[in-house]
Image 1 (spheres, one colour):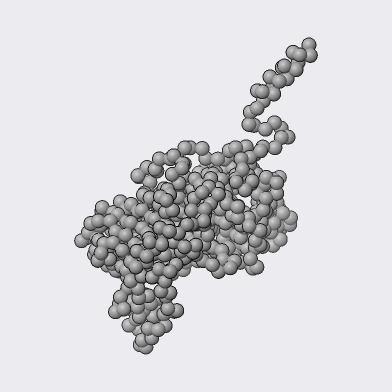
Image 2 (tube, helix red, strand yellow; image 1 turned 120 degrees about the vertical axis):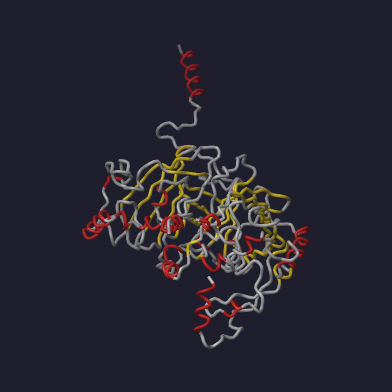
Length: 252
Length: 302
C-alpha cells in the first residue's frame, strides 16, 4: 500500500529529528558570532590517563585503566625506553607534578580537574583549574615566535580546518612528563592537537606527538572531553605549589 | 622582608645615588594627572563623556593588553625619607598613596591589624606569598604588570589574565543566573561576579581566603574581605580602575584605592609564560634565615 508506506516514512522522519547524529553524519555544532564552532564551557576527562596513558591494571590508589594511546604502543628509541623505565621506578619523587610544577601539554588536559575554554575571534583561551595553568591559543594567524624557547606549557597557534580546531604546539622544555608512569619527552616536542565537537556536550580530543630526540616515529592519543553540566559549576583553585609549602610547614 | 635588606644595607659602604632609580614616571594618564586622587577626580569626569568601542554584544569593549600604573611597594605610598628608597637591591620607588578614601589616605586598620600590616609583623617575619610564587591576589595582581582582558563570545564571562604567576580570573557575568559558591570555599583570587553599570564594569569579589598580601609592605586583609572593583574607560587607551575593600575583621570602615590601567601598545606584544615556582631557588634560604611561609591570619595563632 503506497500511501501507507509513504506516511510511515514521514512518521519515521518526524521521530528522527533527535539531535544525535546517525552513523556517518557529522554533528552540526552551535557557532560563535564569527561562525566558528563554539567550544566554550567547562570540560573534564573521565579516564585514568593522568596516572598512566597506556593500559594498566590497578595499583593501590591508582585505578585500572585502558590507555589513550592509539595502538597502546609508544615508539621510544632504545635509550629513551630505558629512561622511561627509570622514571617509572622513581615516579613518586621524580614526577615533576609532585613538586606542584606546571603539568605541560597534553597532561594539563587529562589531569583530574576541570578546565574552561573561552573563545574570541583571535584567541582560544584555556584556563585550567590545576595550578591555574593558562594556555593562549592564537587564532589570529600569527606564527610561533622564533626560538627555541623553554616554556612549560608550550606556544600554541591554532587554525580551523572545517569544524576542527587544529593547534600546533612547540617551544617546550624537557621538564614535564605525560603521566605519573614516567612517559616523557625532550625539548624537541611538537604537538598537533585537534578539538572537534561531536555532540552538544562532547569534544573529541586528539593529539599527535612528535619528538625526534626520543621517538622513532610520531604517535597519537585521543579521548573524549565531557562537558561539566552541574548548574553551579565553575573553576575553583588548585594552587599546587602553595599546598606543598603549607604541608611542609605544618607542625613547625 | 626588611631584615635581609637591612643586613645588606649595613654591609654596603658606598651609598648609591638616588638618581639610580630608572626613568622618571609619566605625569599624566589619559590626559589626567598621574597622582591617584587627582587622577580619580579627573578620570570620573572624562568617563562621563567618553564613548567606548562596543563588542558585538553591545557591551563596552575593554579587550586587549593592559598594564597597571601603580607601584606595588605600599598602597599607602612611599615617602622621600623612607630608608627603603636607598635599598641597594630593590630600592622602593617614592610615590603617593593609592588610597583615595578615607581622606587621610591610610588603611583604616583596627588597632591589632595595624601592628601586622604596614611593614609590621608580616613584613618582618613572613615570606611575601607572592615571592613564594603564590598568586599576588586581588587587587595586587593588577598593580603594575601586564594583563589581558578578554570578553569571550556570549558575554557570559569576562576573563582577566595576568602575566604575573599566570594568574587567571574568570568573572561570571550577571547574564548567567548562578548562585555564589558556598562561603566555606575560599580561594586566593576570590569568586568574581561581574555586571555592567552604564559603561562601568563592576566586579564583586567574595570567597577570598586572605592568604595574599595587598602590597610588598605586608598590608593585608582576612577571609572576611569583600571587594568591589570598577573599571571604566576614559579614553581608548586608559582605564580608571577603582577598588573598594571592606573587611570587618581587619578594618574600621571600607577604603578605596584608584589607579590607571594603560593599554600596552608595543607591536607584537603577547603575555608570556611566567613559571615562578618552577624556577624559584631562594625559598630555602629565606626559610633558613628564619622567615616563615604566610598562610593568612589564622596561622598566626598556631
